[in-house]
Amino acid sequence: MANYEKSNELLKRAVEVTPLGAQTYSKSYRYYCQGDSPAFIERGEGCYLYDVDGNKFIDFVCALGPITIGYNIEEVNNAVKEQLEKGISFSLQAEVEVELAEKVIEIIPCAEMVRFVKNGGDATTSAIRLARAFTGRDLVALSGYHGMHDWSIGSTENNKGIPKDISNLTKTFEYNNIESLEELFNEYPNQIAAVILEPIQANGPKDNFLQKVKELTEKNGAVLIFDEVVSGFRYALGGASELYDVVPDMAAFGKGMGNGLPISAVAGKKEIMKQIEDGIFVSTTFGGEALSMAGSIAALKILEKPGSYDHIWKLGTMLKEGLEGLIEKYELGDVILVSGLPPHCGVEFEDVGSLDYLDINSIYSQAMIHNGIITVGINNINLSHTEKEIEAFLSAAEEAMINIKKAIEQDSTEGILIGKKVNPVFKRNIVEEN
Ligand SMILES: Cc1ncc(COP(=O)(O)O)c(C=O)c1O
Image (tube, rainbow, N blue to C red):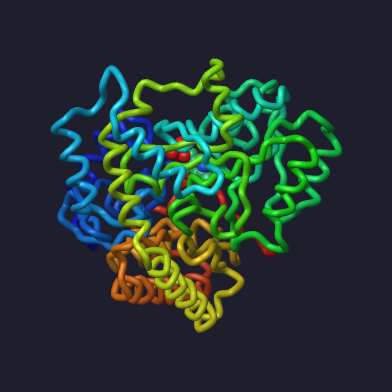
């Protein structure tokens, strides 16, 4: 086992002062085999991470999506440093705000105007507020995850602390099931302000699903919002909207747009966005923070170079097909499911015998970490990954599958699992069949 002494020491201190010892659920120790995994990272370089004990890993989490280019990218660093010399936040606007807004409008199909905020949830929440104001309606139809705000989390089972009156305003529909959205419009005629969805879920839209959602939304006078916080700048420069040629009324971006810098954006039709000028409230102190703006401009200039997304899709396809091949080789098709499109794809697990899916997940996670791979199931590909890192990933995944097979045969993780079983806060294990 690698040495995680410093990680473990830091974790002991962290859990005393911060819930779960982390600022984000999915970065917490509960997502890895505690005791046999790193908990703290010191630095990143390209697609590699170095933990506080000096262990080196190939990273496929990409900071939960933001790292689209790689860590410590010179052009992005230089842009940030140059801006730092001038200042971080000012009392009036900085030129970089206009420059970035123009760039986003050039790239994003629905963007006639844009406003910058900080987190993905700020952007989705802004879009929802603008849609409600625009339509004079209260209900929201959603599909996917849209951040920590009441209107969004109120629709999940983690809805304690959210008033029922707010939760009741959000209705859910199923991805790739147009009838489920149709039913909502029938049940709540003229009441739905917005339809918001992650445009790419599971293996992507089927049977013109996005086009049908657009038609239905238009017919019913609701605002269509694509939550492109994950899909934006990851599957294509212009996100799912560009990839599937469906233009929503509004879109929310975050994660991928600044290669790790804290920046997000709500964008859309001028008539909807302009309501902000009438006091429909979308305003934050740090919305125009200039380091993130400068870094984001530099990041987008790299991402827009020809071949960027071919690279991401090519390596993602290699990873995805490699995983499928291994699952077939080890006859684990009932236990390990491959999900997602190549730029953002990976595995999910099923219960088997007396092992539950988290047992399987733990064995997988352990083998990956032992082989120097950081993953939480779904993997993000960035521009710094090469075939060499994908090969290393697949070789680690093969060891994971051999161990999983062994655990299934003995119907226990005994002698296989060294660290603690993973125990995520959100227990999700969903693969769409269609
Ligand atoms: C699709 C989607 N929308 C919104 C969010 C919220 O973004 P943030 O955590 O930056 O607020 C996330 C975060 O994972 C997301 O995946």
